[in-house]
Length: 124
Image (tube, rainbow, N blue to C red):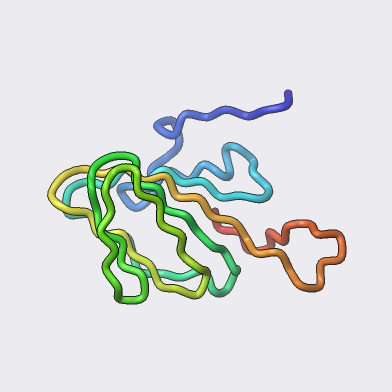
């Protein structure tokens, strides 16, 4: 089979919002998460400096605030936000449900001669 398919609703929800899809899809170079955020939900502040993952947050439904290095970024459906690995980020949902697709990928290592993705410690 040349593809893998999963419905995010069939994946166990973590932290009352997150559906991590990388493991069931067996991805090797990209992390994908669907976050269905209840009113008032907040993610934990975190960064990806240790594993050098950049992320893109795409808001597909509702509105929310993503705090990047203490800077609140207001988002509405259709907005996409790139976040570098070393920046602290946190989703803060408002009064209505919102939904994000979060995409992450590790950086290419400087010492990797083959140009392959380094996925050691890849959290998805």
